[in-house]
Length: 316
Ligand SMILES: Nc1ncnc2c1ncn2[C@@H]1O[C@H](COP(=O)(O)OP(=O)(O)OP(=O)(O)O)[C@@H](O)[C@H]1O
Ligand SMILES: [Mg+2]
Picture 1 (spheres, rainbow, N blue to C red):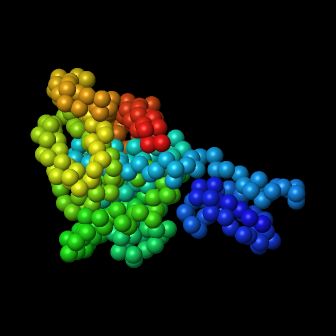
Picture 2 (cartoon, helix red, strand yellow):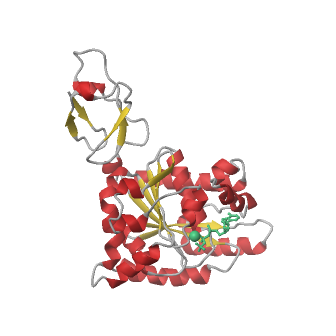
């Protein structure tokens, strides 16, 4: 009998007798997506009719294209990792297939998700591990390529390349693209070869800007660097400016927010509150939705997820 992958439409000729009775789903060898199988009892049924479409995520990953969002700003402690993790998890919760890629030697993304892995981005790039071993799935529909100390070695490897070093991560991730609706990159503070690699791979940038400290200067510096990259990356866009650490009791919060709105208008998202629950959640390996679903932090990130997912239509 013939079964067809609902994602990439690859057809497989399968001997029905060899499928174990308890098998509920299969994994497509071509695109790596999993999909459920339902066998029709009627022998006259057409082979394609026995495939039950996966309910979520959307089977249109290829058609729509994978959105690749870099969460980045050279300044430290502005909420990059918190945002990358909660955005990735939130998108997975609304049915998207998401790959979160941690490009920071601090390796905080795994910690925040309570995830353990035997490798991650470094091992994928160096081919020490295949994609299925390097990637872990800490939540339903959420895959993670973890970062951490091993990235120091990857940085050296990239720096030693005579040419094309800036495309190292993009090339390593290219075969995985068709599996995901989104790739979300967490970046390290500062500016190094991995930041450049992320910006050569991503096509949208989300910049978290803390309303607590004067990050506007850091943002200006960052934008200068981005415009240098944009010469080589047409279409690379600062798509979202996300005000973080918003505190309505503090005047400075409003002053900086107003400045951001004057400068970046429509690109400015609703601010994320300075919320102690957000800072407590990582110690439990939980996201804000799991740790304190009713908190202002959870609400803020849910709004962000909705805004980002609503923009999917722009990519069709
Ligand atoms: N909205 C928030 N309210 C309260 N605390 C927060 C909020 N967002 C992040 N934090 C806390 O602030 C600290 C810095 O956040 P985070 O690690 O996400 O920043 P970062 O930009 O990734 O930092 P780095 O540049 O070091 O990678 C963390 O302890 C985090 O739990
Ligand atoms: Mg971080």
